[in-house]
Each structure stands twice: as structure tokens, then as C-alpha cells.
Length: 131
Image (cartoon, rainbow, N blue to C red):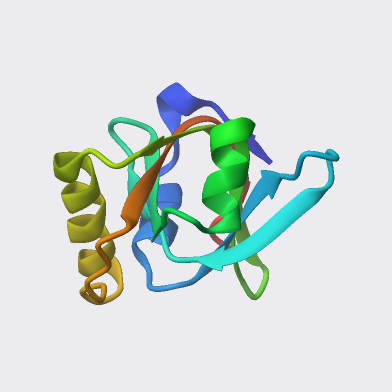
């Protein structure tokens, strides 16, 4: 089911707040999909998802070249896809915010001096976040 961005049901934010891993799909140069397991945070007000990663990771390389990405979280019969355009940033304040949000949902991330944040401006939400 597709959800209107300006009127997302509470079940979307509730599902995104639960401690589950997701996958991040980015596009390789040949157009094929690269899928990586990730943790992420969701800002429902801004319609922004954030992923932290190492600057040299393939997902970061791919997102810099082609901003189209999909985050997908699955738990049994519940699932959610957050589609949008990614922006990779090494800005210290933005990375710190992504780390803080990640830590609130999962646990404090290990120090990584090459960490960046993948900031995803979500433009489509699909799924079944509640049964």
C-alpha cells in the first residue's frame, strides 16, 4: 500500500521506531541493485531517513553517483519501503545528528573518523507497517 507523504499513518512512525534492521538499496554503475543491511533513523516531521556509514563503503560510493535509494524494513508480515534521494554528508553537525538518532534507536555507534551520514529525502512510502 502506498501512503500519502502529507498524511502518513501513525503506524509508519511506530514501526520505524522499533528496533529492526533494514536494507539500503543503491544503484551500481551498471544499473544493478546493491543491497546492504543497515540501521537507520526516521524523522517523520521532515520525512527524512538517516543512515551512518564509512566514507569508503560501496553504498556511499553508489549514493554519491546516483542518489536514488530505497530503505526497506521487514518484520514478519509487516514491511515498509522508504524511497527517495540520498545526499551524502561529512558535515560534523549532520553526522553527529545521524549518530545521535542511530544511538537512540539501536546503541551508540563505535567511533569512526571516516563516518558520513546518508540523508534520504523520502518521497514515497510503501508498505504494511501494521497487521
